[in-house]
Image 1 (cartoon, helix red, strand yellow):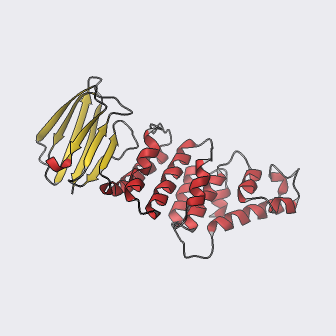
Image 2: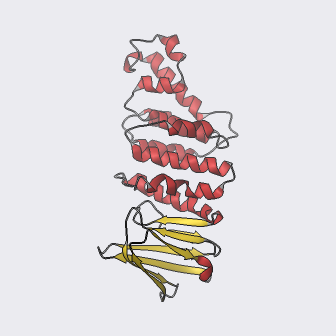
Image 3: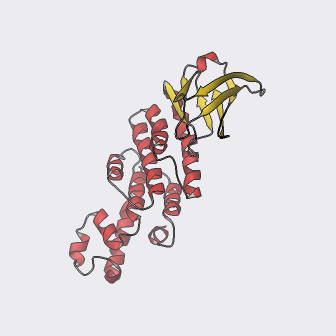
Length: 262
């Protein structure tokens, strides 16, 4: 595993996927994040000339560096610190405050993976605080300003799956926000009849109509959208069941959302 994570030929996303496959483990005394750093130390002691800082630091000075500094010494062009932070979060899922704080101030070229990681850790932190509504909104809040303008299809797929999984927590919110035209939003909403669903016309601004169909594909409601920023759906007005929301506008943009009221 460590060889794979330290191999620059593998993408950041593939490394994240491997760490994710390991899963959470707070009971194991062996910490993968520690093993990761120990492996970097061994590499330095074996071949210091492969590290950026080998001309300015001796072995003892290198070993006294922080984990982040050791990783940066290895190669500034790699996104290894993100991998280390994810390993650290997986080592103890009951305490991700440090990881979340580090991610807030962290920047790297691969913004797609960075935002993916920020969303996951933020959701976990909210879950630990028993704020399930915030956990459900973490990914949505993380991506709607970013517009999900992602080129990496693997990352986009992972975001949609995570959004769908975390979206189950939205049933704890008074209001569910759905951003039209954001390709990272889930295409299915699960909500309680007591909730309000707000269809927000961002990043795509809609001039057109919204039609609501029941499970028998019969249109039961329609709205004219004429420059409105959003449409509010009071779910208490609809019986429990499955619905399809269809939107189209004068530019021939079409959007479809599955709504399940429980």
